Length: 549
Image (cartoon, rainbow, N blue to C red; front, side):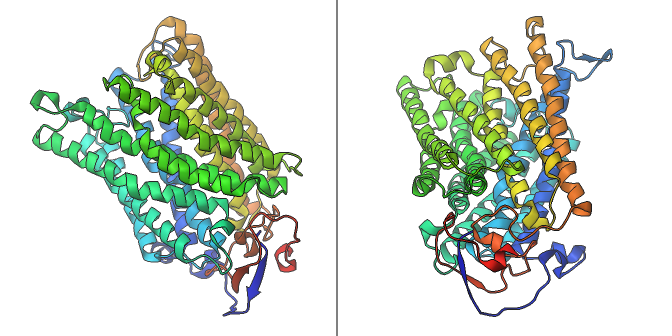
């Protein structure tokens, strides 16, 4: 925790935010960033559960090439297309993009900055309602027939299919406004509401990660919104933007879509990296190595990430020169990520490491994300990518980056800040077992898919040759282990709300400002206004006595 001198201003006894006002209406109308973060967390976790069910159904249907389980066919081809599309849409737009910024970021960011709330509390609540409306549109698309295009909505198929593409793209369009408003709010909060004594280089690295993410949200999301509007107009009025039969260019849609969607990869992963930057120094009890390098690398990833969208289109017919340039930039954007990983490892070196659940998930992140990054080299190399495009190698790489990176980091952050959010400690033993199951299940599920892809198994195929069956079965068995690990994680955290002991203010010995507050925090966060006297990762100075209580 950044050492803090308290200014005796407007000290007032308050109840915590959970008990400040009771009743559904008080939650629906609140502008308290902590309550909004909790509501986001509930909605996002529900989306994660739904997307996970779709994933398990996909793996079950791929258990054998005849799609037979207990003598019955699980899905026909059309249903399979709809299920894997819904898995992608729910996981990307309803869960992984808003998971860390909207849920954990909303709760933690103002506390870390020493602020009473975000800069625009009412806009924050509006962002939540917009997210809810977008989710309703998405659910309506699911129950009225679903979508069979894949989560990328590629033209020209998406302009001609009879599935609910217009309704689902409207859902994504609405969700984009929630993302933009959240990003604007966080940028203003970081610029204007830092505690006295907190300069840019006294901010916790989590704030740097959220700041870089917010830049991408504000600059890139409008491009997706425009693209989805054009797609809806194309479907409704046949105006010839993307449909080649009437003078359109389907590759243009890919350029528009990936100009947003590759930066969106960093909307997903940068907040996860930001969480890891908090957990590793805390559980190593050591000052973060290369603070400025990590901070600047977040901004570098955000900026360079806008320039690499073309590596999704190496086989689309773009010019060889463009492909070479995009390949070079793809390798370039890996450098800031490598800087972070080496700095995290240097922080752990000779640290007093405690292997509690958040740290175990952080170590899992380092291993899984590194595999995801290294396998990205194959996809960034032009000659190799031609062989691997649209195979299960891409599926495995994407999941090692997104789930092995973002989702594992999200779970790590959830364990890290759970005592602060709820005022309760969870069972450390159960959390460790759940982490082990999740790690093992994830690798069993997706490592086998690298082998499938390298041997030529196409992704998104309903059926496959018998020679691929053993690896598909192995992957399906792994998904069951992974599901058990995630289910046990949910049981561990939710059961703590009823039976677990109360959490102290600072159970992990952290040095950032959120650990100076009560657990859970009072409605306006701090009894007195905090003033920083040294940096956020200075473990050379003792904690204030009142914080250890």
